[in-house]
Length: 121
Image (tube, rainbow, N blue to C red; front, side):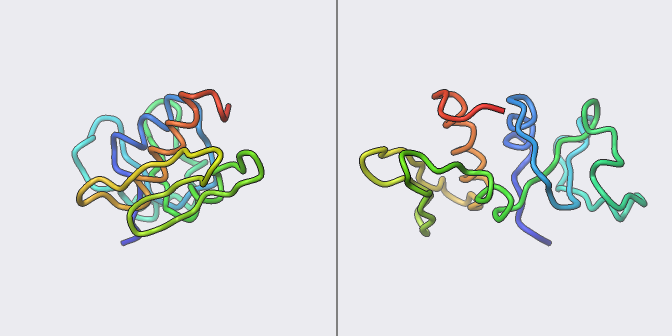
């Protein structure tokens, strides 16, 4: 299975208005303790066929989130084993938490950039 954002990060991304073309995985709002489910399992071809606004939180993969990270002061984000960062003079980044996927780290960085008003959706 593809590593995707966990339920909490997927929900927070939805709450701040983040939307991107995503994989075929989602969390159902009534079942937040489960793993991301494949849409194919339920007969959907695309996440747009689901009622995302009310019931589903897309589970984003790392590639999708990296594509969504903006260039800040002409700097692209740098991905490394320990986390994701923008280099000086921006100096914004996050270290990976223990046992956290890089997809979750990228999701947290998008949330942080939104909270600092560096990106808007």
